[in-house]
Image (tube, rainbow, N blue to C red; front, side):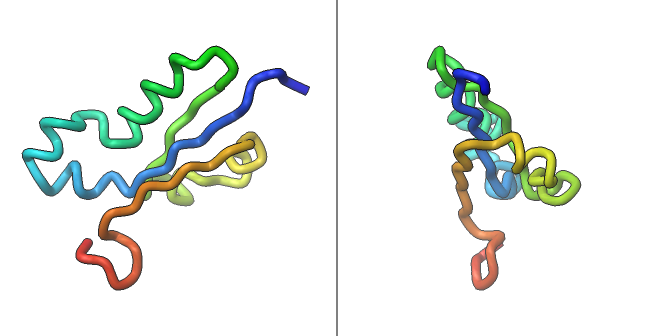
Length: 82
C-alpha cells in the first residue's frame, strides 16, 4: 500500500469556459488551482477530472485509485444555471 493519499479533484469546468473573468482568474479551472495547491503537500498524489471527459473523468479505474474525491459544482448539476 502506498504511503501517499490519492486525491481526485473534480470540477464541472463549465463556469471557467463561459465567463471570461472567471477564466482569467482560473485559466486551468478551479480544479487546476485546487490541485496545484494540493500538489505542494508531500503526502498527496493528486489528479483532476472534469465533466466533459469520458465518464465525466470518473472512470472505474480513476475511482478505484482515489482515496479522497473533492467536488466543485457551480451550475451544471440538475436544476442549476449551467
